[in-house]
Structures are given as structure tokens and as C-alpha cells.
Length: 416
Image 1 (tube, rainbow, N blue to C red):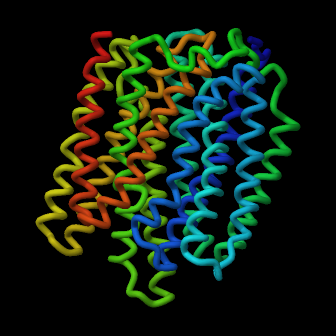
Image 2 (image 1 turned 90 degrees about the horizontal axis):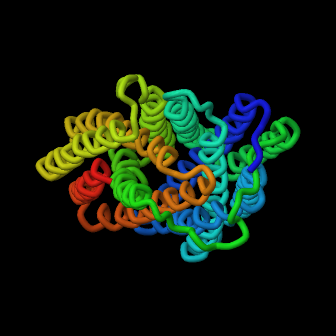
């Protein structure tokens, strides 16, 4: 592999490109969710809109590791941005006169392209950190925490941007505007990304070895699957639809108000989650940052996460109907969930880079994020199904079960 003469400049360029992508990714998710909910789609139909996005993530993360090893991280980063532009341009062609079935199939396909784009960009950016971070103690944890935390803060801003654009400019204008901005960003990255970003790696000519032989990488990946399933089972469909139902009075003006409020909460959650991730090294303590020490913290915080959705599920079941006290409790409880979830995610993001071998880092990271995408897919499907058939209590109870599974799997990390 090659190395760059100015790793900090390369890191900043990769981070800036990743920020731009995630801003559009967050905005697109909120646009699609709120627009089609307003058109009367059921929770299960809304979940289906995002299924191919997550399926594409599973496949792409395996292929992206090989592609990056074969052609270089810069190539996969450019490809991710270009595909997102294509997805946005295609989505702008959506015809409101199409049937629900045709709309679902079309949006699923476009979201699939967007899923490929997202995971190409993510894998490129995360792998670059492993190869660019200085060798000094604690540098890798700080660099990956900053990239991941800032990315999620930007994605949170995208959630609010998407809701605001839908309320003010409308669906098609918002989509075309985001595509135009990404064209400018891609041009800037092509012009200014420093030469020498790590490229082709040994063993890149075959697909063999797509799964790691390190049991730590494999166990961490399964724990990650259930961790993100525990989030997305309420995050993708359940909570946004519940909040929109509670906050909207059914009028056009009420729906616009609800768009802003729901988008604002989702944005606040993601931004707070990103901020906690960025400061995770300081929050978790600067001393004793060995791999084993961080693995023990991963187990601890995975256990702390479990009771939060369980308590919220009991409260929702007790209320039996939307109520102001329940809405307030959900806001507070889910923000606490976000804090604990962010610490879990931050230590996972460090551990995969610490466990992964430098000469096959794109494949280890690709396998890990394949599990991440599988967790999101599982959470997305269960979000629509559980909310439609059991309402908010079943949605949150399912999140608790998945959080418990993540904790039980993570417990073995300290012994590997």
C-alpha cells in the first residue's frame, strides 16, 4: 500500500467529503419518511422503502473492502459521492400519479443505490483513518472518534434539513437542490484531495478471506449487528410516526409544524449522539486505553443500554394511548439511550480498527460494517412490523431484546 506525505491534510479532505455525503444522507432519509407518511403509507410500507437501502449495505460492505483494496480508497470515495448524486437525480423523477406499489418499488430501488453509495463512502473514510493516524498512543481512538462523532452530528443536521426542505420547498425541489450541492462537493474533492491516499493492498486480486479469521473481529461484528438493530427498531419508523401523530392536528399547517418538530428531535438526537462519540475518549478516561481496557468498557456500556428501552416500553404499555407525560418521558429516555448508545458505538468503532490487520483493514472494516448494515436491516423491518402490530410498546420492547443480545455477545470480548 502507499502512504501520503501529509496524513493530516488527507484526513481532513476525507472527513470533509464524508460530512457532505452524510448531510445529504440524513436529509434524504427524513424527506422520504415524512413525505410518504403524509401520503398515507402504513408503517410496514414505510419500512419497505428502506429495506433495499440496508440490503445494499450488506452486499456493498463486502464488495467495497475488496474494491478499495484493489483500486484504492480514493476511487471508492469518489464512486460513493457519484452514486448518491445519481440516486437523488433519479428520485426527483418520482411521479405522484403512480400507484403505491409502483412508488414503493421505485423508491426502494433508488434507496438501494443510495445504500451502495453510503457504504462505499463510509468504508473508505473509516479505513483511511486506520492507515493515516499517527502511531502515538491514543491517536487512533481520537481520530476515529472525531470522524465518527462529527459525521453523526452532520447527519443529524441533515435530518432537520430534510424536514425543513420538505416543509418549505417541497419534495422535488429539495432533492434537486441536494444533488446540485453534491456535484460541487465531488468536483472539489477531485481537485483538492491530496495524492497518495492509501490504495491497492496485497491480496486484492481475489475474494478469498472476506471474513476475518480473528474471533474478536467476528464477535464484535455480531454485537454491532444487534446494537444497531436495537436503535433502528424504534428510530426508523416507530418514533417518528408516533411523534408526527401526536404533534400534528391533521391540517396542512399542522403537518408542516410536525415536520419541523419531528425533524428537529431526530436531528437533536443524532447531533447529540455524534457529540458524545467525538468526546468518547475523554468521557471514557484517557488512561489505560489498551485494547482490553476498551473491550471491558464496551461490555459495561452494552449492559447499561439494556434497561432503557425496556423501561420506556413498560411506560408506553401503561399509558395505553398518547399522552403528554409519555411524550416527555420518551424524549428524555431516548436522549439517555442516545448517550449510552453513542459510547457503545464509539468503542466499537475504535475496536474494529484496533483489532483489524493493517494489510487487510478494508476487508475487516467491510465485514464489520456488513454486520452493521444487517443490524439496520433487521431493525428497519422490525420497526415497521412491531409498530403496526403492537404499537409503541412492542416497538420499544423489541429494542430492549436486541440490546440484551448485543450485551450477551459482547461479554466474550474480554476473554478473546
